[in-house]
Length: 258
Image (cartoon, one colour):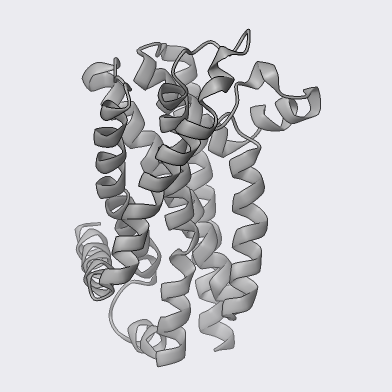
């Protein structure tokens, strides 16, 4: 186990260092959520006056969903790094090395989790300037971190599995957009569940992204309760475990077919 952890940490470090070699990409990933928060908060602020909305400040409502959405979008492109390794032959060399194959899956997931920390901290800081408050205390912080880590790991593992199976950048982009965009909009990131059509509300209840959004929003509002926390975190980590197994199977398939 210690060997797997060490190798996974090494792979994660490699991906993190690779990201730092692309300063423009880092800058865009940091600025884009900032613009979303300002634009959405200004554009949809009057929505908070709708009866039944439940929040007087739209930024307070929207920020938890935006944090999840930012982590989600970043994790969705995890497979692009894997495709680059395939094209350079790096993945074949790593598979021929003594490194355990599981570390090639777990390492990028750790990198995605770490990559979500900085934009999340920036968004929270900007949110305070817009009147957003975090009322969940240390328990709320822990719940948000666990929820974000689980959804990031699940989506990143799914992205890696798709990359290993389709092996084409265009196909991966199409699949990621097909999966992530509907999951984002079929959640309560933008609008309370009570104000959407019935069929949308049904889809929202079964959406893993919404589980992370609901946990994050409850943590921000200080309304966490044990049962939904345990249920949603259990479902999210179960999903992450399942997608990691899928990515591991896709890597084994890649190794066999070359």
